Amino acid sequence: MAVLQKEKAANRPPSYYIRQRLLQNKPAMVGLGIILLAIVVAILGYAIMPDSTPNANNGLVQIQKKNPGFSTQVLRITKVNPAEDVNPLAFMLFGAPEDYSEIPIESYSFKGDSLQVQPLRSNNAMADQPRTFALKEIVGDSENNSSVSELQQSIQNEHIRNKTFWLGTDKAGRDVLSRLILGTRISLGIGFVAVLISLVVGIAVGAAGGYFGGGVDKLMTFLMTVVWSVPSIMLVIAISLALDSKGVWVAFVAVGLTMWVEVARVVRGQILGLKEKTYIEAAQVLGVPERVIILRHLLPNMMGPLIVIATANFASAILIEAGLSFLGLGVQPPAPSWGMMVNEGFQLIGAKAGLYLVLLPSLCISVLVLAFNLLGNGLRDAYDPKIPLTNG
Image (cartoon, rainbow, N blue to C red; front, side):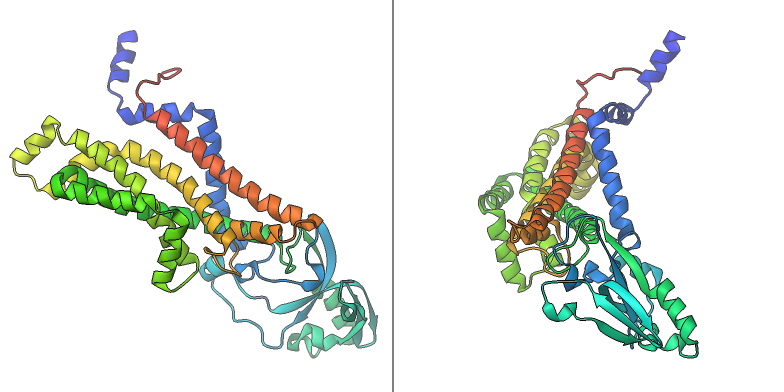
């Protein structure tokens, strides 16, 4: 029995031990769980957001800078020109505009075929004056033939709602929870695209320099040194000026082009060691094309270090994007970004709401970056054959 177990263990591929070491690393699995949860939140996006309007940009001035847990009644008035229906995929990707406008109210009363409301008190004295609306103005054209009592019942059931802002509102009266959820999509999207760009550029430059050597290696090393010496922020500014634009896609490209040097250095170092192996020399003697040697024989043997560095770069990309958005160089309003939300809260320092607006997105950034760092450390240990398994 023991002999069979030993033979079975001997036949197991290296990937089995990598997977087992990773599964036994509890901090890494916690990080992976947080990342998977963030991915689910990012994919669902508008489907789980309290404010499903595009960019979660439905702001109500009367309820700006409210603390978490704030609740109020709102009157929903049907718009004269309702928005066009969107298909489910478009809704998941971009959200959908509301068919009504909202007015926060303190109280209301019916008077015949009209509704009198007391708007929620705010700093604007004019907004505190009672307002009167015709019932048909509120419900729109869909219920023109209804009686007054039916209109009143419809308004009570469908047009007057209690709205709770679980994480408060920002300075424009927008729901912070919705913007944090959508910010998850932006942070993960920028991290993914940035890592993808850095891997493509870094592998190409590092593989060319490490394999061909000589003048090619000197040129690639010089290029890496020059890019490495330029601060990331300055490089992003230069890329933004070159593309004559600022926005989400520019941030994607700019962050990716600032992170490829580390990938290139790792690939170059790995290839310098691997190209001296006997099987590479044999492939060269047999006349195997250099492109095939690099893609099929060299790169697959450095997947471990590339996965580890990609995970670390993911965390770095999230931090760089947050810093750029904080400075106004990354994602532009009204698209929500955690870094931009921190900046908005920083401008309100001194007010209680400002504390929450700084703390909440900062906490999201810290937790997600920590999760990627924990997973990266776990992957690094999993690919280290010197670390034994606790069992099996």
